[in-house]
Length: 440
Ligand SMILES: Nc1nc2c(ncn2[C@@H]2O[C@H](COP(=O)(O)OP(=O)(O)OP(=O)(O)O)[C@@H](O)[C@H]2O)c(=O)[nH]1
Ligand SMILES: [Mg+2]
Image 1: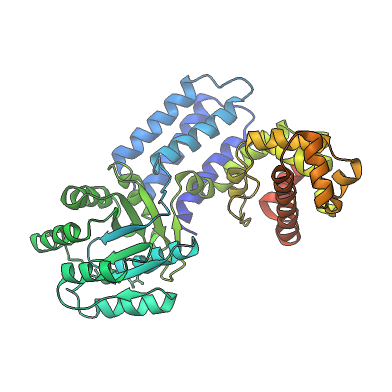
Image 2 (image 1 turned 135 degrees about the horizontal axis):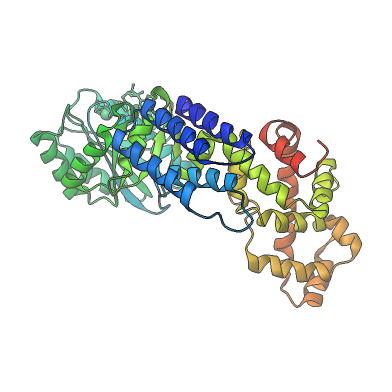
């Protein structure tokens, strides 16, 4: 696990708080000392550590918790929020569109490996990527690109000793591809030679994105290096590689967030799939796992309702009606975006987009369900085309609306079955479920 030492130290520190019945100054001070120690051990800059810890201390001691939230919850929430801010603020979003991406960085930072990881990322999202080897400096760099391309089934182009010429030939060749990813050469430092080469390459490619690739182990220097590259070629994002191999990653993540460009991805291993989009919220949730889950559970307890408990039990037993589906979405919406909730649960991977339901849709579904018979609500599989039309007419909706409701229900039911067997009965979700009063 990435930054596991930091995560362990943080969750131990938080666990101390959750174990206490109240929060007072002594407890806050002890926590702040623990926090500082943990961050310093992750090689985070001393000044940054003090800024962060002072801010947290200040907020916890002086801010009044909002109504309905205990001082303890307020403290955990504050720690969480400030850590998220500290480790990146923005989610590393990338647009899924036709674009050109140039990767830059020093020797051995992981550019070439990352070009393949990125290609793979876009491939998975349904786009057609291509790889271009513009590192004409290091021997065999171009062969590496071609080999990686064939390994992941992505077309590649790398030929000749002129980087800019290679790039412009590739742009013509790959005019029908969606995302063209350009690997560039590195140096030991950002010297005049590399500066010229990169500027030239940038002018030729006119990329939509320029990603700086930095290895996590460089620690605090990450911020300075991103600034230098930003000044030279303008970077639109940072990719921090080798997060798996160092305890210093906290430094790279926090120092990068100071410069304007957000961290987009992190590399977490040598293989092409050891790569993820960087989302500070999710990252911090996983980092402090326990503490977050704990406060989540506390929230869950607050909204514990007999209806939800019953629908959850039905879900477990396979008797999952449309009514259960609706109530579940409604109750869970009170806990915040379901996706975020699910992401906090270790070991549970949710398919994208599932259960993300808009308020407007919910309103329509409620109306539609009013026009259904009890039998239809218990077992929506009986709803055929003629029934769909009847329900649509009865509720003043379109056939499509009814179909969509059923589609959502079916997908959720299927998903519940899928994750139900293996994952629901153990780990964080089981804990959460127990809090809902479900029988596991
Ligand atoms: N553990 C780990 N290793 C990585 C990661 N990313 C890259 N590497 C390794 O780092 C080494 C250098 O990677 P390259 O992709 O060749 O780096 P580069 O920036 O293209 O290097 P030059 O072309 O020499 O400038 C390789 O051994 C990679 O396998 C990562 O996220 N985790
Ligand atoms: Mg390379």
